[in-house]
Length: 399
Image (tube, rainbow, N blue to C red; front, side, top):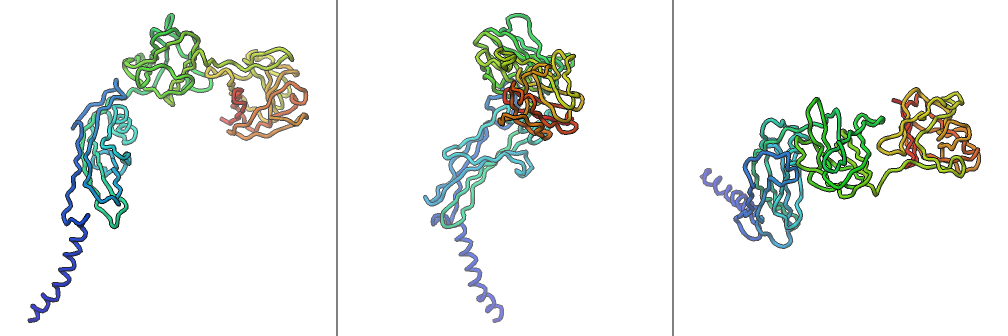
């Protein structure tokens, strides 16, 4: 009788747990959850193609998840990561309403594998894709639908941006190919200026005797004055199209892996000042004067104390012995020179305006005597100076 009593006493608890379990599975009045979402991958394995960076090579598609009452809002979330990582470093996207696919190009997968996930280029990597359908709103929590797929991807061997020489070539070059010059201000920036004609522009790059090509993502025209992301390829399967003959400036930054082209309609000109008074002087040289020079002009520096940038003729760089104390910058090494100094709107000289290392400071300019006696206060150790006359700012550094 004791056993029978215990059994009957347990029945209400068992019944309650059974009911709770049934209620947990109740969605819209149904005791059975029927999931409907299906996931498919366009391929099971693939080898990435460096010659077609923007081509879509992998697509995942899925169908609708099960229907729910109108007070529930559904969201589809996609994830992609290396198989076995449990999506710890996944690329995650909440897809827009009505979107039931996710695609990747050769370049996207290559960058993800080598840069984001640090995978080797000499072996395939298994990637795992997940689509999750989740519901928000409604009177209670709804279990999401989840589907996963795995794809094996073989990346290609990347060609690094190591260069010894860079050239402009192709049918857009009217004569023999031209070589880009390494700029004095950076070991990573190369510049070429010259004439181009209608045709195709190629950018060969030599490194340790081998030639590769700096290429755009796809065949296209140049974008005027905008830094464009480029990559290195063994063959120039993509190139730029030049449609207008004229003077061009081509700038390659191998550190940022960008190319910038200035077209004939956007030629960068040197600065022009009124010096001597009533005469237009093109500024191609600058001299330092003040305490660091012993209050004397360096008349022996016929090209000035600064180097003019190849990137922009209105940018000048000084690199050398430290220049600390009251200083101004002249367009000629004479006391009556037109000068660049601190901004001064007072009409009287300012003996010294301190500037800080590494901070851009506005530049003023003038020929008046009071302006020629207004000075920057260079901090101790200043041995690198950038004069940007296009933006009218100066930056001093200790390197």
